Amino acid sequence: MKKIMFNNRYGLTQAVLEGRKTQTRRILNPTMLFERLNTYEGWTKESIADWKESCKDRLYKAEGEELKEMLDYALEHSLYKVEENVAIAQRYIDLADNDEFYRLCGIHGMPLECIKFEKGCKNKMFVKADLMPNRIRITNIRIERLQDISEEDCLAEGIVDFESRINKAHFYSITDESATYGTAKKPYSLLIDKIAGKGTWKRNPYVFVYEFELINHPLWD
Image (cartoon, rainbow, N blue to C red; front, side, top):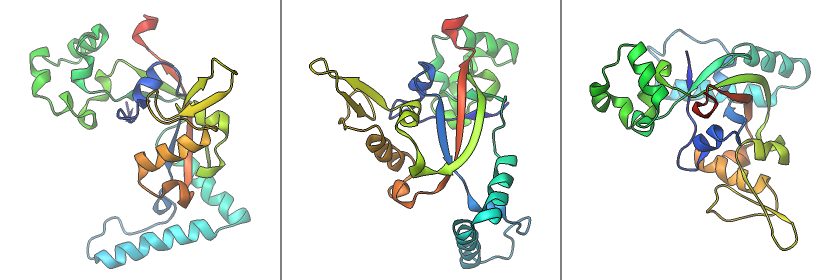
């Protein structure tokens, strides 16, 4: 089973577990569209950089049928597939009170007393997917430019929606404790820059849009 990581600092893992976040956007790497040597052996850093830039240039200059073929190829080779179940990566230490986690440990022969010595105890990059009690099912995949995201989809990405008690107006923020804005797209643009690197929103890259539903949540047991 594969796993997927959501940002903890901005509350995205929790948003998934609460059912508020049902989409995630992952930047499409243009190099996946073009053949290269099996390894970079013998390549200089400059030649690698030039090849990557060439791939990017070809994708973003493509139009019409050529662009369609590129994006169809990318969809076909997407990391995740429609109807696939994917484990939500969580640190072992964050699952200390989760009975399902301990049950899965037993099933997979993981001695509980050894958990604290595992790399995944405090870094979810190293957790074992089969030990994750919470999972999502991919329901749809598409490719679009980042800035094409709609207001509705910004909310599906986990942006927080506040309703004013005074005039019922809506305001939007990255988290419950962050600054609010008049549109959901503004805090999302700030969020993606924090997660994927400064300038990501402005660059407007092609992204995979994964829509999903939460399954196997402990509260549903």
